Length: 198
Image 1: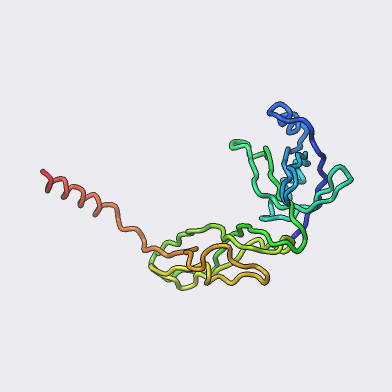
Image 2: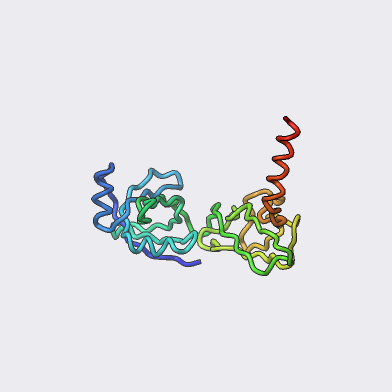
């Protein structure tokens, strides 16, 4: 897991106007919380934060005002719905060796059995518990040869060492569905029902 160093500054101005001023300077307002301490309001460099957040569950080594060093992981990121720029970030304080609950992406490899089956991601991300400095970015699951009715449960997924499930073992993560029937027969059925009701 990668660790990214970012310099942050504490902020004392709040509200929409202050947030707009911060964003005009290509910075992002954020809140750092956890470990029972009072939330700390910070300002982070926009470009550095944007690059860091490209890595899922990135570990951020914060240098706050050049005085305090903290480790944190992103918990909530708000983006502008139209332009996509970062509006606000919530960061959770972590310590080396501490276990944290996070969601990791589920990626698939292989091909389904022939026959036009559909793969449904019941969970796009798998809730797990991992050591704060060793959070996996994703897990890869083989779907080779699966057909309609087959499913992959949480307990079927091989997790990296030191990572455990934070969800029931029999939770369905992926399932294979039969290809949808043509729409025409459904239309005919509906007409038949109307005739029967008349």
